[in-house]
Amino acid sequence: METIGVLTGGGDCPGLNSVIRAVVRSALKNGYQVLGFRYGWKGAIENAYIALDDQSVSGILPKGGTILGTSRTNPYKNEGGVDKVKETFKKNDLKALIAIGGEDTLGVANKLCQEGLPVVGVPKTIDNDLSATDYTFGYDTALNIAMECIDRLHTTAESHNRVMVVEIMGRHAGWITMEAGLAGGADVILIPEIPVDLNEVCELIKQRHTRGKTFSIVAVAEGAVLKEGGMVADQKLDQFGHVRLGGIGNLIGEEIEKRTGYETRVTVLGHIQRGGSPTAFDRVLGTRFGVHAFALAREGKFGQMVSLNGAKIVSVPLADAVGELKTVPSDYYELARTFFG
Ligand code: F6P
Image 1 (spheres, helix red, strand yellow):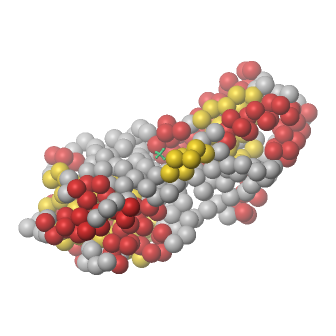
Image 2: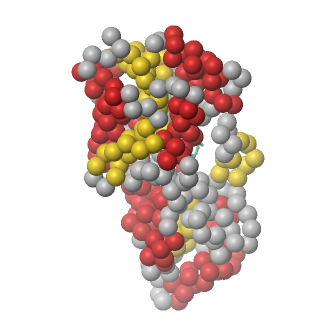
């Protein structure tokens, strides 16, 4: 019986379990056995896995997170990490490994492929910032959570005549903020792609209140930067060199209150956006990705990643997915501006 491995790396997101289930169900049907490596590349380094059978993936479709666990471990940043991963492939006689992750996890997958390991990728991230796929699973769930939070903030903002600033995830790409803001009717949307002009933001809010509106909602991505300088982050780096973001909402909230005189409150959505049950869209996309990823593994199409292109699932080189981030285009942001103020 041939063996394939599967792992989930990077930040978790709703829909990961749909992919794992689809990989396992397709593999078992085709006479393969599946090893699920624990905590992303950490499990591949340490040869830590669980054998996945029909029972292990039963009832996991509605579950958020990942039954395999995840981490931001980078084999290239761990002493002897890559050799240990190679050892794991040998020991278990892996025909293929399906790596489910974002730019970091897939970046490692791409490098390992170039070193001759049989790896296939599946794109995930709530940020939807991976190139070479129209959507990543996890995004739709996070977007709907953020939209619902904006809806909830509206009612309390209106009752108290307040400005509500809501800080939404998105390090370098403002997709969740942009589309949750559009769907939830935010009055100003601030994303990492466009430096924030605080004077303009305050002016928009003032004009809005002059028109008789008594409250405002400002949606800001955690990675937004101020024109007048400053991105808010602590200095701790993870193994992929990312700083931990958070705090831009508070900074903007304080400035709005100071500059406009309107009472302002700040809500940071944080990891709430990554938790809970996936939407139908993410379950179905994850399921389709999983079935196609197994097919790529079986056909020996290594170095490829499954991708959504329109309504179709296709495969693209991993290198295309990790080369450049997919950010919000400026003409889309211009469309959003129609609704500012
Ligand atoms: O990449 C997904 C993401 O949720 C980003 O939006 C966010 O900046 C980051 O992960 C948070 O990472 P962690 O879970 O390590 O705090």
